[in-house]
Length: 103
Image 1 (cartoon, rainbow, N blue to C red):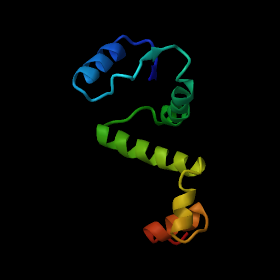
Image 2: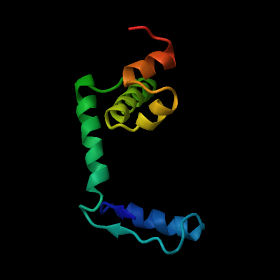
Image 3: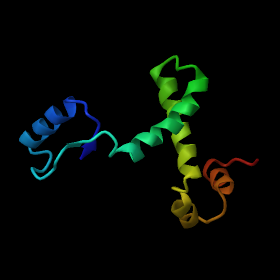
Image 4: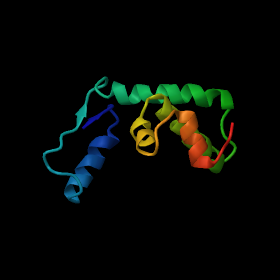
């Protein structure tokens, strides 16, 4: 498992192993740049959040972040298989079918 150098990860992994929730063979590698691919994915989301000037409540934060993530998933092509399996077309036609919208 690759993480940053936060010491809490080592303790958490040891506890999970002791509880039997993580196999004993799992190793913790706390090397600064090994998880950059995952960490860099957050940067794009942070750039979307910054102009919103924060959130007033957890409810609005959760709703807004879900919407951002769904749109990013469309952009990354992660819905392509699903779109093709339910009739094909574009993302726009998929949303129209899903929500009954007529743009």
